[in-house]
Image 1 (cartoon, rainbow, N blue to C red):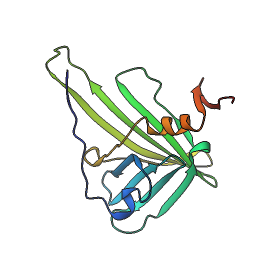
Image 2: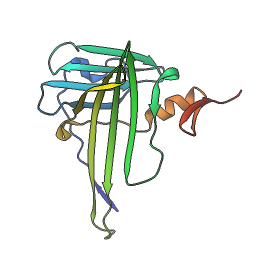
Image 3: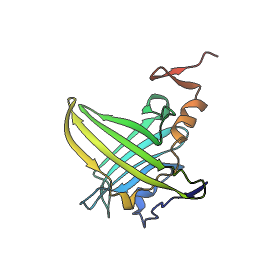
Amino acid sequence: MRYAVALSLLAAPAWAECGGYDSTFLFCQIENSAKTLSVCFDDEAASYRFGPTMGAPELELVERIATLDYTPWPGAGSTIWEEVVFYNQNYSYTVAVAVRRDIPDDPDALVKVDQFGGVIVKRNNVEIANLTCDPATIYIDRLDGLSEAKNQLGNVYSDGEWVELPD
């Protein structure tokens, strides 16, 4: 089976290149906007950045991997998806990524892959913004990277929550 994957290689501004972080959960330009969104991470922390394409971010949040509110893909279906939530006082920023695979019946045909992403912003649990990534600008480095980082800390995802494994 052959895969046709189009990952957009952007000339990202310096602050969107994950400065100091190893991996990119999601980087994109927001549809019909000059703003970009990025979530980057390493073994210890994850960062959320949002702001103009050129210049410093308007908002940057950092959370330790150990306490990061992250939902991994459950492993079923043709769409691989994950989400991570960052909190700032009475605001939450839910960043979701998805990769949909359209697998044809013909084993010699190309598998079509579409990528999606965006952020839902809530204030006091009330949605105030739902921003979608321009599909042509989406860059996803590793969908399973946050799971691996959590696992390395001795956590496992079970029944909808992260639990620490006993020593």
